[in-house]
Image 1 (cartoon, rainbow, N blue to C red):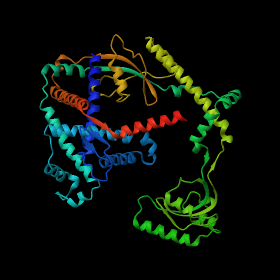
Image 2 (cartoon, rainbow, N blue to C red):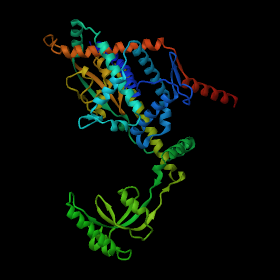
Image 3 (cartoon, rainbow, N blue to C red):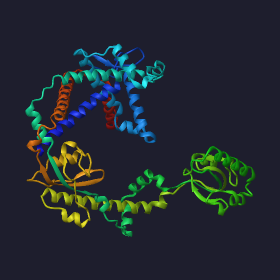
Image 4 (cartoon, rainbow, N blue to C red):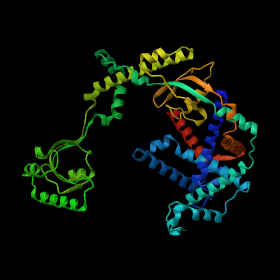
Length: 508
């Protein structure tokens, strides 16, 4: 029974992948105008004689890159884009979309300009006071992509309806699916973090000397890639006067605070700063004459940091407004950022690397030992108890929900759960997820009661129809790929560059 659930889940998983690809192509990449106007350059690909132009490819690629920029923010890097082969994958998706578009046209599934216009006019975010706002729509950047996405959305909806209308599910199939997917299961599980369990062993003098001989390159590499770790940040020694503003203060209170701050700022000088701070500052450092000590640069509010940038040693700032009130600063001293040399931190890095290697070796050895016991069908509870690892219970749940209580929605663990049975209640391996390993054991398995069969008929029929529809789309897509004549110019050039580089290496 569990094996049947597992097979069903695998089929659905792969169909979902396919449908996701098609939907992304249709919703994001638009209608795929293949015109190769003058000045666009040679086509980047040909699909059954139709070209994908440089302009079309670059437009979609830039859209994709902008999405990555938004997602990654400051972490965005061209190396990441190169590693993930974003240009190559973008073109592959355009080729797949071109196939979909060609087939839709062949089947007569077309979307007229008027239909597209009606859809655009009906969208609430392009309306103002209940009417379509053409001025707002015309301001939209890359309208071609938006219109292509909407056209594809309409076209895809029609194709879905075409498939749904042809799906017929027998009562026997619905009954069988209910029995399989509504089965109840309860598991015992344990989370094992071998890295956290590993003991920390301080390296001996002999270990340090030995590693210095064999791991010099490793130490240098660690230093170069963790330079921030060995940099003493820039810092400043400040005195400050603060005129506070109470939380949710009225405009009158804020105005009074500002007036008082302006009066203090006019009065204070480098010579009398300490005296004024003691007498008039609302800051906790007032008793120390406003001396706040050494402060790491970059840790203060932006307006304060900008004011510090303008100060010379011993100089007093102008009035600074912040979310905490008004400030006047005096710069007493400053230190520039300083990078520790490799030689001064070599022993520290060496010691750290030795510890990490020892921990990694211990964790790997223990994990392999546990997996060996599981593979041989031997219990591991004694080992878990020794490490004070609790074996928890999930409580009864339905596998078709796709979520394991206490663990979450993890496909590999769900698959492992479906392979358990009364004859083999303990998994033969551990499952890795988010730096931890999971041990699984079947406690109970309960089939759907005969009296409950048919209660969820409507939902089951809808779900099965969706799955069959997706399977049809998968089969259709596979046939298109097999029959198509595709020439990927970008891929061909990449292979040529790789080949040329190989020849150069051989010559060297």
